[in-house]
Image 1: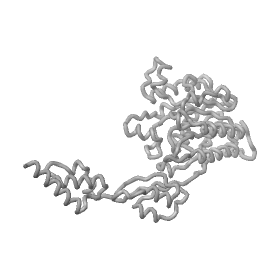
Image 2: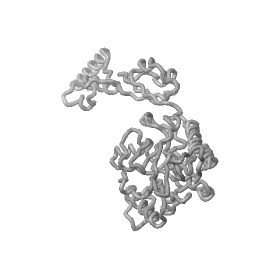
Image 3: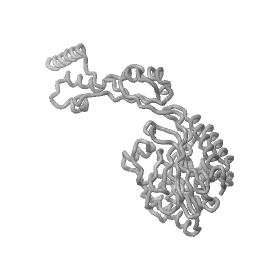
Image 4: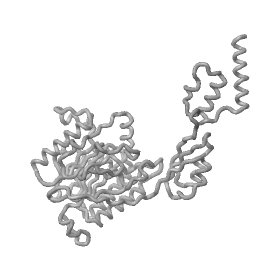
Length: 394
C-alpha cells in the first residue's frame, strides 16, 4: 500500500485507503436538462480527492451509466475519469447496477485488468480481485429472472434470495482465502429510510409493495460492504454503507450531501470511514405560491427552480414567464389551494338527485381547478337544460 508522508500521519499506518462511490448515472438528464458537463466537473474533483488523500482503490458500486445503451459522449466521460484515477495512482473496481448493461460495461474488462477491474459476470462472484492482500468481491446487480439458470438447484425468485445466495458464495471463498475483504453490491438493504431521495425505481417498487429488501443479516461477512442503488448516503452499520450519487438528480435529493466515503481497511479488517464532500454544481430551490407571488421572490437566479403554483386557475404560459425570471426553472407543479368543500371528488358532487345544471357547474369547477361557471354560463346552462327537457316532453 502506498504511504505518502505529506498526507498520512502515523495514525493511518499502512491501512489500505478505499474511496467508495456509486450511482454516477452518466447520461441522466435533470428534467430534460443535460447534466454531463456538471457531472464531469464533480468527477474531476473526485479524481483530485483520490490524489489528495492518497487513495489506493476506488470502488464504484453500480449504475455507472443511466442507460443500458449510453451515448458516445457518456463513454468518453467514463474513459476520462478512469484514466484520471489511474494516473492519480489508484486502482479501480467497478460493478454494474440495474441501469447498466453488464455486457456493454464489461466488454473491455480483459484489456483493463491491470489497474481497472470491471466486474459484471455473476459467475465470477466468488473470484475476487486481490489488491495488496485485500480481496474485492464484485456482485453485479442480480435480476432473478436473468441469473437463476446459473444456479438451477437454488430457489431464486426474489433479489433477496439471489443476494443471500451470492453472499454465501462470497463467504465460502473468504473462509478459504483468509485476509481482509470488501464486497461491492447494488441492492436495497434493510434499514434505509424510505425518503424522497430514493432511486426512482425503488420509490415505484415501494408504492407497489414489490420491493425486495435484503436483510442486513444476509449481507454479513466481508470486512466492508460498499453499497449502491440509493442516491443518499447512509450508514446501516459501521462497515455497511451507501455513498449515494455524486450529484443531485431530483429535487427530493436537494438537501442531501454529495460525496464519497474514504474507507480504511487494515489486515485485521474495517478500520474506519470518513465522509469526503464533493461540490454541488447548482443549488436547488422549491418555490411555492401563485405565479405572481413567485415571480416577485428575490434570489434563486443561478439555482434549479421547482415552482409549485397555487393559482386557482392555471395561468397562461407560466414556464415562459418563470424562465424569464429564473433562467434555470426546471419544472412546474400545480397545487391549487382549495377549501374542504372544493376538495370533494367530482363523483362525490354528482350523486343521485343533483340538479343537471349543478352537475355541469361542478364539472367545470372540477376541471378548472376550483373555478366554477360564471353567472352568464349558469344562465346558459339553465336555458339549455330547459330546452332539452321541453323536447323530451313534446
